[in-house]
Amino acid sequence: MVQNHLSRLAAPRVWGLKRKTTKWIARPIPGPHPLKLSLTLSFLLRDILEYAKTTKEVKKILNEGQILVDGVVRKEYRFPVGLMDVLEIPKLNEYYRVVYNNNGRFSLVAIKKDEIKLKLLRIIRKTVVKSGKLQLTFHDGRNILVNKFDGNVGDSVLFDLTKGNISKIINLKKGSLVYLSGGSHVGKFGKVKDVIKAKDLQKPKVIVEVDDSEYITIADYAFVLGDNKPEISLEVKK
Image (cartoon, one colour):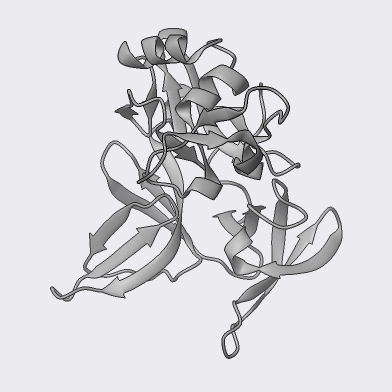
């Protein structure tokens, strides 16, 4: 049975928790993101945005339908939020995208209202189902069936949240602009110098240029943003 709470000492590193305060913290419910790569709406509203001081206040905000994640009203305070999710607070005219800072902790990037319908999704699985269609599985747990798709695992797509379809395929290739979601340069932008194909049981790797230096990391950490510039806004404004 899954517990409702989690020891602060066992909380994911990406939360950036202060360890020596209360013993317990709300545990994310099963959802679009795994435990180690998500944080709760409660933590986001109380500890990051500081719009509430207690869980009771968080629940009041959510029950009033004031918070949307990827265009859907969320009222569960333990709902998991993760990388590239879009957070809307219409009452305050505030809109954010969930990213990592350079310390590998979750942070928020303020975005304009006209960008809330766009989200970048990384392809983590591509399979053929019984109907003969292709099923694409993305990093946020989303699954889409398509008749034909030219992208591969590791590529990204620009997804329209209002229409529920793919607007553009962004390939992981030499020259691509990537956002690093793990490793020693997490939260930084880089340019792909080369893609190293997998051998035997090894994972595919990429050579990335970051801050005028090149280093090798696994392809799983390279989140493709675009060819020359990001397809979405990732500039920290707040």
